Amino acid sequence: MMGTKGYLIHNAKIFTEKSAFRGSLRIEGELIAEIFKGEIPDYVLKNNVVIDASELWLMPGIIDTHVHFRQPGMTQKADIVSETKAAAAGGVTSFFDMPNTIPQTTNRAAWEEKCRLASEQSLINYACYIGLNADEKETVLHADTSKIPGVKLFLGSSTGNMLTNDKPLLEWLFAESPLLIMTHCEDNAIIQRNLTALQDQFFAHSFEGYGGGSEADIPIRNHPLIRSAEACYKSTAETIELALRHKTRLHVAHITTAIETALFDNTKSLAEKQITAEGCPHYFWFDDSDYDRLGTRIKCNPAIKSASDRKALIQALITNRLDTVASDHAPHLLQEKEGGCLKAASGMPLIQYALPAMLQLSKNGVFTVEKVVEKMCHAPATLFKINKRGYIRKGYFADLILVNPNAPYVVTSDAVMSKCGWSPFEGETFNARITHTFVNGNLVYENGKINTDSKGSALQFNA
Image (cartoon, rainbow, N blue to C red):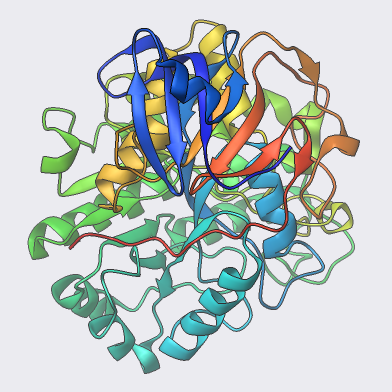
């Protein structure tokens, strides 16, 4: 099954940034060696391992710029090996890991250790953000911009306790950072106000606080009332104002509300934008009507909100107010998801089914396949200036996936490769199935089988 070079992907529907066409592609070593639109010379057919792709789509590998792989420090939930298996099965060939691990990735030593773990264990390509700590802020100034994609700020509290709301520190960062700044935007004061009001309504101050020690809990359908649209909008608007004032490169993560989308410009090309925004598949798929059906399985921060918000987010993706799509893969064990608004952990495993969900939305007529490829492959590569990845181009790294668009299956827990062993998409029928995943020319995934001998590479960023 597996090999390292000399592949010919024959007669696929190939998705490039310019068009989709029937053709073939040859991989030699780590790179895309040739792309054929017409007849293929006999010597090429004879001297390569031929994959018949006549029923398949050939796409660039997904670049997932927002994951929480939990290693180091929380490997009971997930680890680099398990989550990169899930990633490869989902057509993801590169990931950017968030800094809210244990220890937090806020200094050079912690960053180097996480990258060392990835170099030894990751089946796909990798990069690691750094986080901001007031006592270690000089780490940002000395960051290697060719290896670090950005600094991640948590302006709303979430898993990992990395909340940053010190205004002088934020002013300093936006004025001085050589790195792109990526933000989780929620206003904590509004969240606490909303929480207090619901505590009064349900329990008359029986809680010590959000996450307090009482046995009671607030029903999960109230999660978007606590972590409200107002909380998101206020934080996002203030952060954009800060970035504009300091001329800082800003990327706002996981937009969830209609009112936020109006804050982002769609009159410029991606390469020209100073401020950009990320969407996530679960906010295009679910809305607050799904809490009654799925409960805390879809509890995440920011919260999944209304059907009208979901529709506005889809429109924002189509009209380029949202620039990239990333999974925000955040696995927890199912027992950690027990409870309600106060006790259940926030986050869900998404990386294996992010692309299938997006392609299902495409099949349902929500947006085009080309838009999916643009937002999950091309745009992350362009936005983060990733060296020679994200596109099907001669001389680029052969990070490629083959997809069967007509192979329906029902998502079941036994097929989930993430260590946590569950998916919020269980029971859903997806039509698109990833059949092959190549990373740097190596066939890492083929029809349910994983090649663990091959390892990914550290991503390089062009300044």
